[in-house]
Image (cartoon, rainbow, N blue to C red; front, side):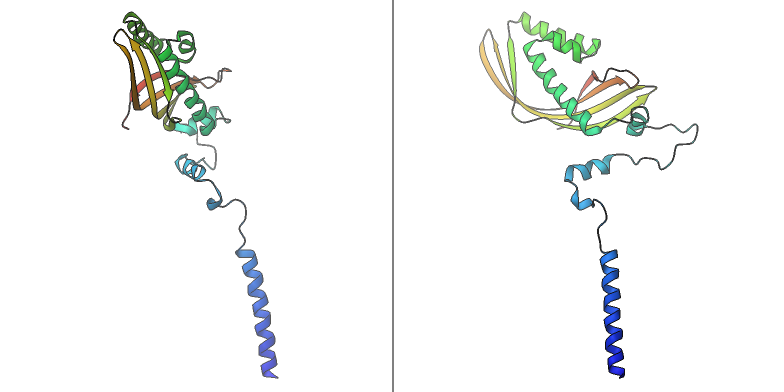
Length: 203
């Protein structure tokens, strides 16, 4: 009789343990290992969102400050747009397309590009570029002053430059690393960002 009771108790214990395992061991929602590596890395780099509204007098910085004024801002979408602007600017500079550059650059940056194009034209040179790989773009820093946002992006690119001049044709493969700073008024209805500064960066 005692043996039968022990068997029944053991059976009940096994059922209870199985039910606990089925509840506690179940994965709820999307797990970190289910996310693509890029999404995990982006989540690790992004600042944590405050659990409650900041106290009066506390200033938000970086991406938190951008999103406070533009809740729809998405880093990945911004970087895709920045990458497209980078390629467009490099090609326009090589071909001397001033109209395209004027739409993408601040007046100060455009003046520098225009002077370089004019010097090349005075020497009787032409140039074209071909990207060997899609450029890599990473957000370096984000700053906000009032409603003016500045986003600095680190670009790594490899491209082939073909130039012609009085001495003939030359082909040059280049690998560049640069920091481009884009600017935009967050309260403006214009969604476009303008290139306001370019710096060299370590490869």
